Length: 594
Image (cartoon, helix red, strand yellow):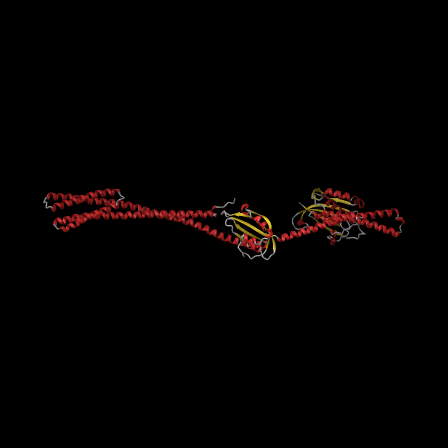
């Protein structure tokens, strides 16, 4: 599995995004909380100020009632009683407001109950004094006592209100401290969270910027790849198509249209439209091979015919398979190649194979004729000539004897020619059965076949140790027979032939005549001290029936070296010749190292 670093994966951006959103929500929650606290603190401060004002107002209303009563007592003018009566309602309303504002303070609620008692007591004494005056009860002692008790009640009210104001100021101070504390660490917290968010967003921005650069490069690379693919389809004479297995929608490449003889994207890609170009005889084949795409998820290669827009019949080969993307979206991708030229080449090859088979049959017939029909009359001629020489040769005239001798020589040459042709034919037709063989053994067998000639010419054969190779044994033995026999045949008169055979393993680029491929080869050299030849004929001597000397000078048919060349080619090797007139010749055989 390919290892993907976290910071390079799309998951990293998702994590950064989620963390950033979470931090923003966290900042929002903290900010909302602190704004709520600040709002509540502000409300509490405003309430504290309003409570103090309302308490002072409540005290003022009580004083108004007391002042109105005192004015009436002094002047007996009932107009002074107006503040007295109206102050009761105001006191009640003010008291209710204070009760509402201090509803969340148990201490102030307790203080407020005592204040209510004191105010009620003070108003009762005011009412009692007013009643005594209105009834004209001149009880100085009672009036004085009411005035004294009323004064004490008023002092108690004043003291209680002052206490409540002090309590409210203390509560206000506590709330002010709480407000200041909240204000002190709120900016720091918000700053830190914003800083962290900014860092994360910066990291995400850098990552996205790198991804955008990478995306641009990838898009450019893909654009080039798409163009290369389009050119490849044109050069390779194939097209491609896609089938979305989820939506059932087809997509054809431009060259897929060209294979049909149409302009790119000239019709909507689809099975029905494509089927219009299928050869009628191959529609059933196409349906059979494509009906299992959805179940088998692949399309085995098969060949079918189409009729192009211009009416030309072409052979196409289709194949494909399902590709699953990361989004679990399955796409069937197929290719279609025009193999008409391959089919034509195959037909041409089959025709040529038939011709070759016919030629081989003719060659076999020729070999049969050469080995039977031609040799039969030749054997009869040889028999009759032999009998003529035995019985009637002396009865012939000198010219007749010369004619008989010429006929005998010609039949012998004919015999050698037929044998050589059969040998060359067998070299071409024999199955190439390679075996691991010791070349020294094959060389010894060749010497045995040439023993009489070696003895007649007093030849010296010098042999280097040869390797064990994977070869066709009888062909390599024939190669040695022909090359050594050639050296013995073309020796210089009066000089015993010396044939030297050496071996080495070489590299092709170090040899003069081999291709520069750095391959290893087995190199076998056969040199002699014979009559040699001119180097300009080095290639001609391997041509069938080619002779460098007159047939009256040296026996031969010009087939032996052609057989050598064919044997070396059967082993995927090379053979070269070098010669110098009057000095000798050198034949070099290269066999590849497996």
